[in-house]
Image (tube, rainbow, N blue to C red):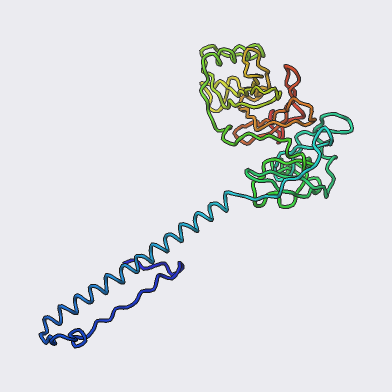
Amino acid sequence: MKLPDPDGPAPRRCAVLTPRSPAEDAKGQSVVAEGTVRLQRSSITLSVLFLFVAACVDKGEKKVEETKESKKKEETVSLSVSQGDPPVEGPIPPETSMVFFSVEGALYPLACYDHAKKALKTGDECMAMVPPGAEVRLSSLDAEYNKVAGGAAEPQCLIGSGRSIAIGVEGISEGAEFVYGVWPRSAMKVIKPLPDDSRRRRPKLGDDEIAKLKAAIKANGGQFSDDLEMRAHQVTEIDVDGNGTLDRFYSVFFPDPKLAEQYIWSGAFLALDDNLDKPIFIDKSKSQRDVFEVRGTLDLNGEGPSELWLRLVFDEGAGERVVAINGDKAEGLGEWSCGAGV
């Protein structure tokens, strides 16, 4: 019989039944002297005692198991729900400058808005806006945290390169898995990240979508055989122009039938108002070994339309970039991070 776990709660205590003597049992009756009757009575009493104790231990085991299950549930909840730091109120563009960062063991500036010059900037100009000691805000997968900016540092993806093009932050690689950050802290509300599962879907394209995307690729210099299969890496709805009608982002490619992990063509388009008749060409892979993903949108200057926060994924890693939409054209702000896109 399995005994209760010694680390669990004490089992329920039970009263012990003590067999009565034949003399006590025979009060008001004649005393039974025959040994066989005495033995039968003792056996019955011991059987009742055993069953009672077994039932008590079973109840104790059940209680222990329920307690363990409760503890597991509490631990699961505590791991999946992070409190983070309370929301921060304050100005956002166009009332203030702001910097948007990816996180690579440090804050890697992707793009920024210069309030004084009313212009979008990248690189060193963004770093110069955030002095050591300034408060920044970082976002993990499920919570936001306040941190303090340090000095210039190498991003993890370029470690050993000697290029200190990011901002160090104490504790940035500990605890939460940080994804992006902003300065000032109040600018966090400008970022509109997409759900993580939007980048894991592999949607099947319709015949009409394939025909229009093939025409758009050829119009932008793409060359491929018409019998090649087109595949989608990501198709998702986003709101770029804020007119109340969702826009659709397409990341598509043609696998190379002769070379694994190589593409005949790979690139991305944006269909404003879900209109694929005149899609906006975003970018294409130069190495023909990358695929594109949109991670979210942000309105850096506060005047619209929103910029796209993109990710370029390849075998050895990934890089990120902010792309502005100007009319029917897309304009990359700065280079892809981490040396991607070459």
